Image (tube, rainbow, N blue to C red; front, side, top):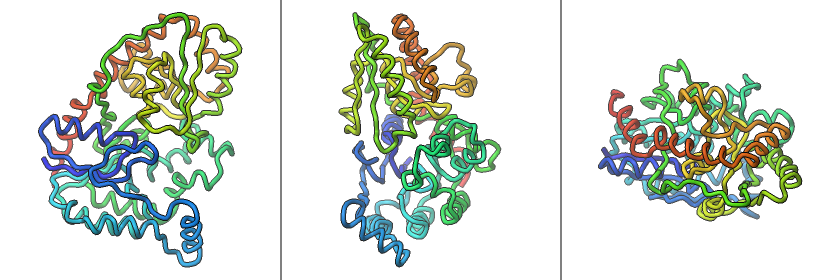
Amino acid sequence: MKILLIGEYSRLHNSLKEGLQKLGNDVTILGFKDGFKDFSVDFPLEKKWDFGLRKKIKLALLVVTGFDISSYLTYRQFWKKREHFKDFDVVQLINENSFFCDYNNEKKILEYIFKHNKKAFLLSAGDDYPYVNYNFEHSKNPSVVQPYLAGKIADKDFSNVLKFRTKPFEKLHHYIYKNIHGVIATDVDYHIPLQNHPKYLGLIPSPMNVDKFPKKELAIDERIVIFHGINRESYFKKGNDFFEKALQKIKEKYNDKVDVYVTENVPYNDYINRYNLAHIVLDQLYGHDQGSNGLEAMAKGKAVVTNASDVFEKHYNLTEKVAINGLPDVDYLVSELSFLIENPDAIKAIGKRARAFIEKEHDYVKIAEKFAEVWNKTNV
């Protein structure tokens, strides 16, 4: 098949591309490079007028005239190369706002894509209209909505989530769903709001290229290494305030046993390399299922504190922990970390099960086969 993957989050589409290519497909990625992570994209888009003085001018222009110059310039980038984005057997959007444009420019891009390709599919792999609205309506469901409702995140810092509760993005949601052949969730968190929707095609886990992570059992000598990677833009969304408080207590309690490495806003490759030495990785707290960073750490056989709730364990029929379920509770985190530090064999056992879980449920070739099967059986 000839396949166009639109958008990139945390290497999801790159891993899927690699799996699809292993199966003999022709795959192209169009989109942004996911910020400072700088992932590979065949046709990269650049978000313009988004920094410094130009951003201030853009915002002033938007307030006065309603014209979003960044969105228009993204549309122009797409339009200049539009001939490269037609005649595909399958197109998959990574999100309801894959181009990060306003309603009008996003819709113009999508109109071209829907018109000039055979089948179009949508991933629910991040914030979108169903997921965001579900979590506002079910505030006890663990999600990034919880720290927002707790007053930790300002509206301006939550705008990429809140936009999905506005009328233009509700319209965009309905337009996309009218034109796609189906929507696929990439983990349990996005599966929950979509259940029973007529366009929902089911959950296919995020692909992981396990070939990039050779199997290696953790070696623990005298000291245990804990890694905490911080992206300041998502500080409260990931629960980093709880992690930092818990780590302070752990350092005081186990100063003679533990080394703690903390990094902030480093490029993807640096981030990965820095936690290679870790035995325990702190990932995130609000949700049911792991994100890509947590999955990669699990693929490397680490003990990961991340989303791994009872709902997740039930979905995968797990009887033993493959990760430590993180909760926004400092005392709970200290207790869980203390147990691991005092029981190094438990770290090794969880890490070994984590690797086996990734191989079974997230292997990029197996996942590519599942996507291809769903795409092929869905009628035009």
